[in-house]
Image (cartoon, rainbow, N blue to C red):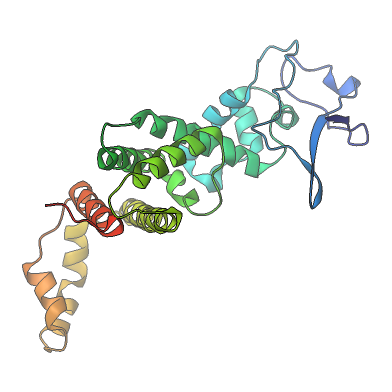
Length: 273
């Protein structure tokens, strides 16, 4: 139920068109739910949007999240702040706190907006095709929004679109051969998620390193090649030498797909022919 919070006076807004806001007191309506650990605020997903107000700039959580995503795409999560988002929207920073109470809620909204695009992968007629479509869509999202990879595995993703993606993935895996009960399903999901997090964070880290140093594979080989050659010629690292000398530079997308199918073969217990 809503609880008025008159004890927390919000600071004056500085946005154009809201020049008189410092002359009136505004009160935030907070929503609480009773839990076994006491009273807690309702998650952002269950709180209604603030009532529309007479202001030059209309706001919504979706609009705030979209602006935050654009800023994070350009500057990363370290360059993201409520003040910068407010400036981009042309409003005072305190207006945003009517919609999100802290940075964590803002990140939740951003993440779920990305999951909305992943959810478009939809269901396929066969379980494996469904999982492949969802995971490849997740990779596309992480490469488009590199900050998204930083948040994978870092905290639970419980927004409605994230839950929809989780449901579709779990439902598909539950139909796989070798997944005979909830324990098998939990293990399969755990292995799949571990692969996704590790693979995407590794790929995004490589991209960032290449950008920040300006060094591609050829430049790296030219800089460290002589040292590596001397070390391999000692004969102490024969398998590493084989990988360096005979191994090809693999395509990232092809490698991701190959490793993903290998994971699916393993967790379902029935390798493909």
